[in-house]
Length: 183
Image 1 (cartoon, rainbow, N blue to C red):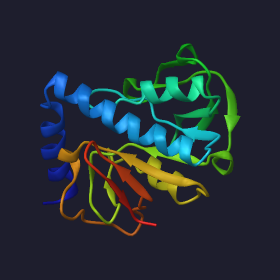
Image 2 (cartoon, rainbow, N blue to C red):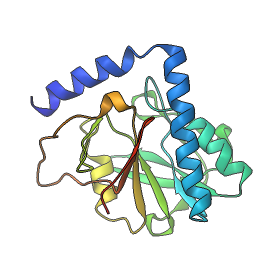
Image 3 (tube, rainbow, N blue to C red):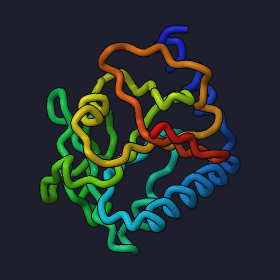
Image 4 (tube, rainbow, N blue to C red):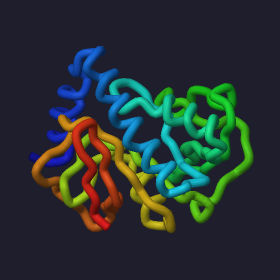
């Protein structure tokens, strides 16, 4: 299968996870991720604003706020992502593809980010991912210094993702069943 076919298949599967099951999976992923933040004394995180059937990042954001972990969110600006420190969901409004993104905030640099949470539609055990096709996160991943983590439901894991020269890996994938490290 090519990337387009994989996107469609995995999105259909992810969209059909029962609401209650999805909630349980989100709780497991959130717990694993927040434990990792605490164990490693992480002070800064880049989160994406989850939408649709993506792994829910809002409880993670709440955890970061409650634990004084600086949190940035991305904003699509032409062909790249700008990062802004956010301390309230009220600083976000519907932007690119109706995804919540910062409309105000202090600009953040990728160099300041210790842990970057990367969205994806599909992942493999080599830590490659298929995103939504815009290449925004591949460009950010190529310039990062911190740890990049993909959050996914086990249903989003596939045997092997076809890769292109510009594709960037994440360092770790956290699913509702396991952690896959590629560092």
